[in-house]
Length: 230
Ligand code: ADE
Image (cartoon, rainbow, N blue to C red; front, side, top):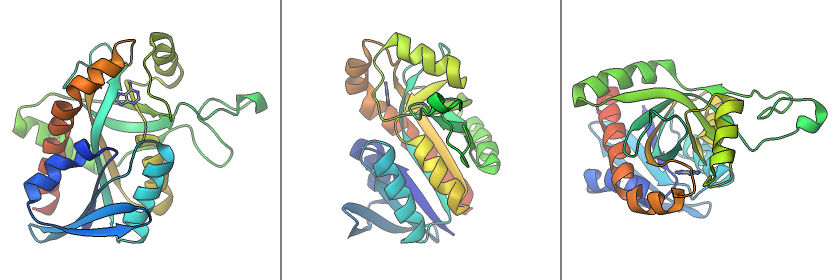
């Protein structure tokens, strides 16, 4: 087993690297990858940089170049659902791309021919997350995550994404990572801690809570890894 742990920003993987303590750094395809042995299992860790293209590149590299056979994503998201508050955790059941639009040709939002509006995350890891949540005494919500190359700081846009995709949270990488993992047959798990409400205060809230929310998410993902390797 080789597990990929991915984030989009340095803050999202820093707590993981800190926990590991020692690791090897490899420069590849314009990014840095960190390899470590953890409880008898190989890990590859990286932050992709923000957005769908960089995250697709990193996920592909972790699988095709580094040989990862499952992928866990840790990071922060903007809340759509009013039940999600800053610091809360959401596990993606399925993901979509909210900015993918060829509706001019009669297709639904988020769809291109031979693709699908939603890509489902690995059911076994979602199940496992319930066990981890109860062991940690944490309340973790499951829901749909919508991804796009846009930091959403607008109530109208956020509500549109919620209504169009039934999404509970939004971010900028999960949907593209999902497409890559699905195409390459690699089980994936996407966890996000809420940093903001994707409204007019989102950028301030994001700046204030990025670090603490990223830490929440990273801690949970490492507990998932502990379960996977045991
Ligand atoms: N990640 C965290 N908050 C976000 C937001 N409001 N829009 C897009 N990605 C985010």
